Length: 69
Image 1: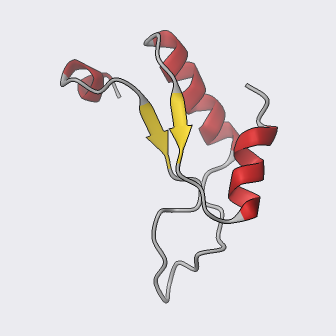
Image 2 (image 1 turned 30 degrees about the horizontal axis):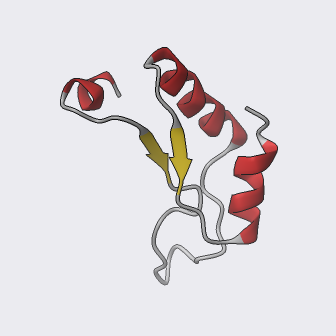
């Protein structure tokens, strides 16, 4: 992450639903764990910025909300 911030990134975007649907990765799969979300939030806090989530399935949206941070 520090490389991305040093190259001009201003925030972190996570894709808890994995971002794409293929025959091997179904759209309803939630790929980001709560621990992964919390790690992204910690990195964002350390860099004085924020995390956004591009989430499609309801389960992915709810996981990002339920994380609490």
